[in-house]
Length: 484
Image (cartoon, rainbow, N blue to C red; front, side, top):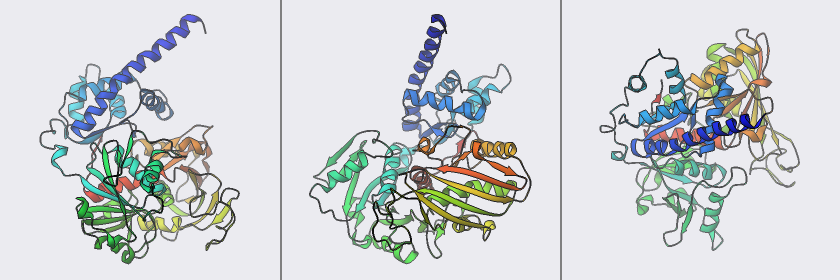
């Protein structure tokens, strides 16, 4: 490559960089002032860096075969600023590509007014600040609790939710509050918290990006009076897993100021297990205690649903290759569960999983059709589910992958299903991915009616994103996604 070509390549990058930089304040303005969440092919771009925005544009090449033009998305954003939009979720990448397919001479503003007709000039009649945010309390502050806190803080400017408190057991250390804040600030897997964190010792609170989070010390749920902290009708998210049935979780509702309870683990008994995107429509206003099922159930159910709808599933087996968790021992020691007492950092450990059976709670049509098992492996995060399925109709690798690619982009489950065709992808590449499952298309095997699919999933971040979606649903906060 000669000097002229090198200079041209750098100049093109700098032009893209300049456009991306100018997009950042427009994205923030729409979010904070209009309650408009923007994304590019399902990937939210709020609070993205310049390079992060350019990577989101580049990602589209994996899906559409060509990189998304920053010039096109910039023009869409600039026009959106003028439309006095009401609250909604707008995919500017899909809008930009759809506009490119319009007849020559189509005016961008006219096109966007048609596509976003429900939102245009809707700001004055749908002002987000006229709706009181839903108070949310995290009961437990472990791996999932802290990731939920990060997402809720990130969304605090315009999501209709407000993280008001975390509840933990009374600490033994004098600097317990500082330690809690430090765990939120630094994470060995997910990296540093994006923003600033302060400890307010006087008010026993942590202030993260301007959100004041009360830290409440309590031995049991019924000991707490949330109203004493100005918290009313709160949605309590139980991350402890100590209670998993209605009787145990009902203790939360005995606390003053508590309104509803969401369990971040598989529920037992008659509790509704909700996989957002699949069966959230089963929720009613009368449901006061709900389960968000497990991370694995959330990973496999959306993919199983679209496959069953398209091809039918006669039977199958789900093998989960799961990162180790805090439930296991670092070194060999006593454990009530079989094999789980052996060192998690040194062994692959065969263990049971109820995820395959739990699918039937969200998809009753698959009841009795799936078996499952799990292997815990020495990695701290990102797992894999291997679906070995007998379909009701024959297909081939290309057709099956093309179908799943389309589902990841344009279906009602686009927030849940992701897709990769990279021949070099490994587990660490998916740390922080907020989709529930990523189809590894290069590993797909098909023989007639038999299909084997490999699904990556961040068992922490992907699951936490699903929990937040369910929190929105329970709080009655919903966004229509555009383009439809």
